[in-house]
Length: 255
Length: 244
Image 1 (cartoon, rainbow over the protein chains, first blue to last red):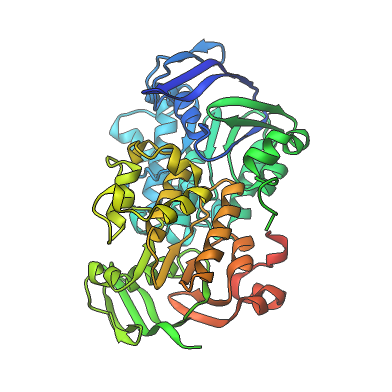
Image 2 (tube, rainbow over the protein chains, first blue to last red):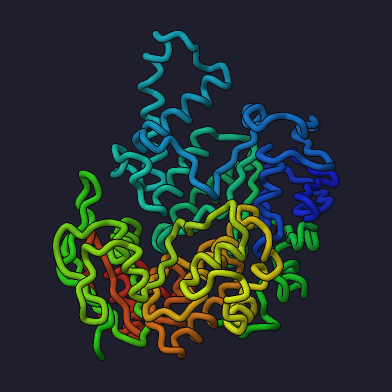
């Protein structure tokens, strides 16, 4: 469904992503791990179109989207939850989610742009938004201004927004960072449910190895921008490159 | 144990919101105090209020026995409190070196930086040495987090306030971070640490304060909380044993 071919980007003399070739199929969850600065977020930026590739290609459902601007990639079904918080900060939590639902419906041609239709459909969008906020346990904060949410709640809102857009490809960049431990399972449950649908492709950048172990069908390891391991989770986690470069087991006792 | 930092009945309002509802908190000298609690409990607001970034609308904050509430943030920093905010506060257009220089009160040029201390920091966070002359905006999320921590520890400080330092860091770097904070403690720094990573909380915490709804609802030793699953359930809504 999604494929990268020799995908590369250089910043000055620094090769941040170095000839990464990878295929991802619908119905699978692939975790992307690697040391800080390995190029994980940059790879996401290349796939979603936030950064232009220096070389190589990105293909979505067989179509070359390498030169397509980010918004058009979103239209074609690439969905991204950001590491940086990008919301409508002055709108309420519920309005943010409602707008995402609306954008999805209008993008699919299921909703007209004429004001009467928008007015009539509005109720459905709000109902769906409320359901999504229930699912991420933000319902009690639906009237709060998005910018006023504590960091962990903003992350939950980002997950709700992505669910509202319901893309074919879900890209999660550390979805549980900054979230209190009692709330992490809520987000994991949502990702698990998404995976169970079997028709969505999920890419997950995550440092919490217990999360990776539990959710991933496959792990891809980046190191200095290059793909250094790719395979079934148990084997990849046990590999020397992960044990040393990523988990640091050789250098440090596990605390 | 004397308290290096003491909060008594601290209230903070942010716009129309009343966030802190009378925080009482003692941070004993020479210890690592963990500040735990759910999202929105008021942990980050407490750190910002101590730094003067939010104004305490009521109550008293004493550092080294002297009141600091109402002082301006630069004065509070000058008094010897280092702060790593959850937003990191990196200057993206400045290089890694310049970011560190700005944080070092004693140094005006790179040559003035304490090279031994710098090497010590590079040992934990090698990426900072590698990207020394790069604009900090080019760093990855986790590398920015390393820079934010490095800025707070580039000079010895009496007290460090650190908001979720492990966020976005690879496991090997989290281990390095734990080692770095242990060494800082051994050098007589006092640390107040907000952290969701319980491996870190248990490895580092001497004392612990748990917040809920803008108040400190529990104060004790970290080891006791770490061993008492019932208490964990009651205070944090989970058991630490199943969340390594």
